[in-house]
Amino acid sequence: MTSTEVVFVVLSAVGSIGAFRLVTSKNVVHAALYLVLTLSMVGAAYLVLAAGFLAWVQVLIYVGAIVVLLLFSLMLTKAPIGREALDNQQRGWAALVGAGVLAGLVFLIQNAFGSAPRIQIQPATTSEVGASVFANFVLPFEVVSVLLLAALVGAVVIARRDERP
Amino acid sequence: MIAADTIRLPIPLIFSATLFSAGVYGVLARRNAVLVLMSVELMLNAVNVNLVAFSAHLKDKLFTGQIFALFVITVAAAEVGIGLAIVILIYRNREMINVDEVNLLKW
Image (tube, rainbow over all chains, first blue to last red; front, side):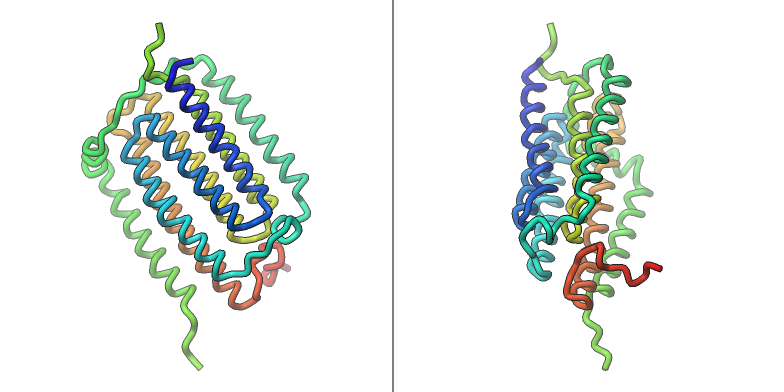
């Protein structure tokens, strides 16, 4: 194994443990903090794969914005503690399905890409990514911006308290 | 001799599969709506890891995978915003956010 692989395996082990604790934690705030751990490890995985811009976007948007939004909504709603309050009765079936998905995916990955050539990691600088966005992906970029605007307006309309008598 | 800055493709893919199955378990087993949303985020992140890994694997000159991951992150932000607005609204009306008790529209 190369050093890159060792680093990546360590990162993914920490991230996977965080993900596992996130879905099994008995405390919602702990779950949110485990989400921070997992998202940071995903960001570090982007860094290892030399996607630097994406890694910082991950830190800014996910760790910076989405987790804060989730924590705020945990604060505004009741945050009960305990397995019965947070999990439903189909835990066993859910664990079965999750393990089945994992086993199936690992089998398929080993089958299809087990002998694929090694990835040569080439750094993608922010300017290259930006040039590609604005040269080749302008239309999806604009569509996504309109989608964000619509989601923003929709969220304000849905969550606003109705002032009519 | 293997160069230091190479990585086997299945390693990121298996990381992504682990995150995805944890997310599947969370969506199926959790009843708190905010925790369900967190599990959905986990699955979206798994997809992003896959996109970046394949972008590096295919030596894409346009960085299509990375840019697609950027779009996925944006859509995930929009989705979380709307989802949490709905959660807040449900909490205001019902005083709870358990997804298995929100069954007014169920026959």
